[in-house]
Image 1 (spheres, rainbow, N blue to C red):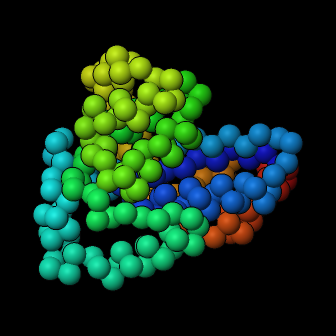
Image 2: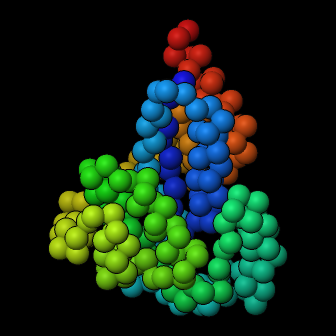
Length: 213
């Protein structure tokens, strides 16, 4: 069953990381000889975030108050542990602007390593607490994927790349995406949220049936 999958997500969204794991499981369940292309598209949960980001503590205080999102993050930790993600929220010191990270993911698509880049950025942020809004950090993330620091700097300095990333975010909102992760199967069927693998498999199957109808 070969169904093209488009995923709209943000790299600072823990549910998007969980959704990625659930999608991977769905692809395992529905494994076939046909390759299933997965394309990642940008969405900024905090589009007005300063380019340099803000203190994580200040961000949580402003968003959740003195509670700091404690009960919400307990639920996220439990959901993450269920799919093998051990979130290390306490390591995160900066809440970044994600435009640069999304631009790097777009460039990785041209190099054939977009999925690997998305995974590497998720891990850097949620497991290692790295500031993924920092260009040097992003260069360090890209290096093991064979993308040199000069190429990273060129991509992140290219205003056309950043503009196209912003426009992709705007297109997602224009078609009704209000939260992420948001999965689109074969440009026919959409599923919102980090749904269980069985739900995603069902959507893939339905999209395949609709194509044949």
